[in-house]
Amino acid sequence: MYKRILLAYDGSEAGQRALLDCHDIAQWSHAELFLIAVMPPATTYLAAEAGLFDDGRDAQEQEKYKAILDDGLHRLAHSGHAATGELVVGESVAQITGCARRIDADLIVVGHKHLDSWAARWWRGSTSPSLIEHAHCSVLVVITR
View 1 (cartoon, helix red, strand yellow):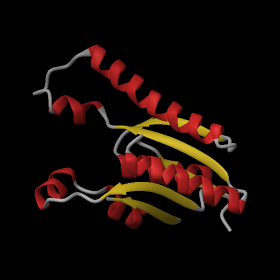
View 2 (cartoon, one colour):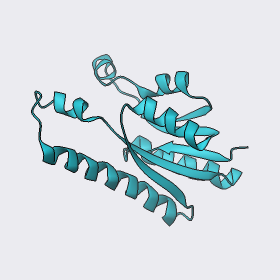
View 3 (cartoon, one colour):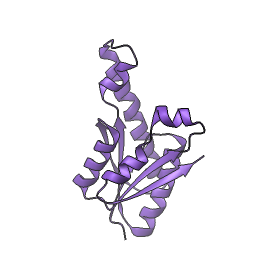
């Protein structure tokens, strides 16, 4: 039975589905829920801007990911389940596995959307397989199409 569940939440359709499944598992197992939103490091989104630095951009990104986290916490609270939330910054797999170790999670839950084209899969990459390889505990990947 799970005692501590970590949900990496990004606000996407797949993330919302994972949130629902996570809630169901937590109710069934009476587990504590921990919710994190992972903000990419500044170099990731600055590279797309041709290396231009903008102080306001970091604040905007932080507000965006804080809103995603707050949305997830609100959805869980509305369905009757309290959760602890945290905004983290860095590479997603490292942040998720690090947080899971820190809270001694038994289960990590993430959402995943199948991408139609090989180009989209190649360009975007996939966190789920890497997460499974690096996690110290079970990983539930909730798939949407």
